[in-house]
Length: 179
Image (cartoon, rainbow, N blue to C red; front, top):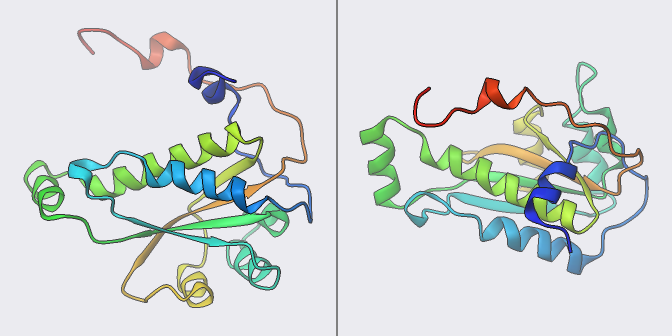
């Protein structure tokens, strides 16, 4: 079993998936359960996860994520997880207003991190997408127009080996006690 740090070191944004290789439903369930269990401000849980695996719908949604040369790889994803911004509880709303911070948006980011790390733990590649035709995807997936579709996570078996992870030097992004 890998440690959390090992998962974080190995997880990458995969932009090439093995076409046609399906993810077992039990694996998808575990990945989504990890996202569902993610922490959120005041336990607001401001998300809804719509999992697309249907062989007819998947390529249609995939096409709605691809434009201007972006996200061409999504056509080979085995599953797409659409993360919709849902209402949150009163405490989270009040806290967001008082502190001028959008806690639900942060919470959705945390849930997507849990989702992608759970995918890595299952041997599934992932890529978080913010570039997509929101009205078209919402139409295809039956998401109410008043809802915001914030992120899509593409899942599949990686078609390419892991890359060397490049990050800024420790001292440029970490300090203790003072900035």
